Length: 458
Image 1 (spheres, rainbow, N blue to C red):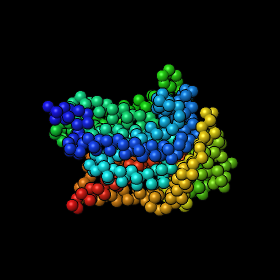
Image 2 (image 1 turned 180 degrees about the vertical axis):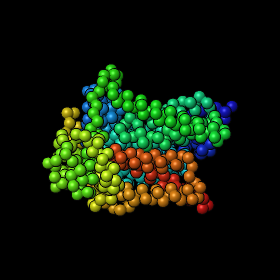
Image 3 (image 1 turned 90 degrees about the vertical axis):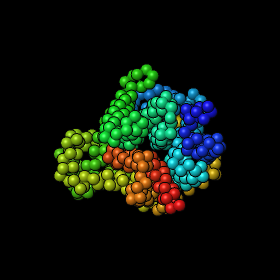
Image 4 (image 1 turned 120 degrees about the vertical axis):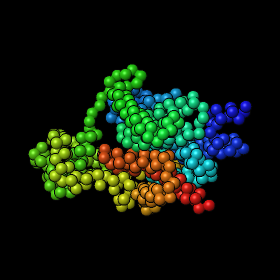
């Protein structure tokens, strides 16, 4: 009878994963190790670095959401956290803990080794682009935490026998991934593999014939992806809970296209804006265009004339200068992956901007040492994102060759890559934090691949 109850319980799958004798102790480790590491991060950077983006989300949480230029969901989440404590460290700790717990749980599910999961977290937090991002209360960490928590729930669903618990976890995973999609405007590209993997786990439970299974995955995955994206788009247009219409604009897409044309102009060696900005010289474009960040190109983007017929000009440049058209994307990618000389661009934000709440950083030599480590270590080649990504691509090829690439592993890899691709296509900045999810997911994939190779050599 006890055995039956365990199998029907939501955590009954742990008995299958780690054995009945060790399940109790390992469940304690699953919680306490990421909890202690999260407390360490929160204490080290107390109360959490805060940039303009952070304070905008906080202001909207406490004073009401009035626009969707930044994702409103971040403010809604902070509003919930405020119910527990108005100290910003509560938000900082919450998103870091959800992130580290999700990573730890996923690594444990695949390796069944607490020591391996712990080792990964220690290595992971030593990566400058990771530590520099989790030190700040940024939505990039929140989005990654939601995505990986959703993936953890989906991966665990495979071990659940009881139908009702399975349905509950299905809805929970879908809700968590939806929160992740709503946490960044470009997050949908990274969510697509997660939603199709969810569809695969669901369809595998009810469909047995391969043709039916694949048709079911395609249909259900498409429905889930469309529903999540449409709901997110609608939610961005209205504030909660009063459903007032929010102010929106298309500045993101239009600014990206202006930067694309500017980058192509620099590559071609002439002004490609044509007659909409005839007085704009190539020398002026070079002086006001900076591929690293939209704010560094304000001298160009503040000109009203460059937006006239920008869609038509952008398409014309793509057709007539197909190589130079990608110059801005190439320069943006170079800074995103840390292929530039010196430290990565905005590797962290080691301060709290002026704010109406009086939040400031206390004196801390440990925090200052950690901030110095982030900046200096980010210049080491083996810590650069491009190096980590190359290793993960090599691991992917090796996994394919030895036929160890499961659907779950493929999901992690594709989610990271598609998020990267979406950021390059739609991005207008090259902050190190923007690829936080890709760096996290590919680091996990590489570590799991190493474990697979080690297991097969025994």
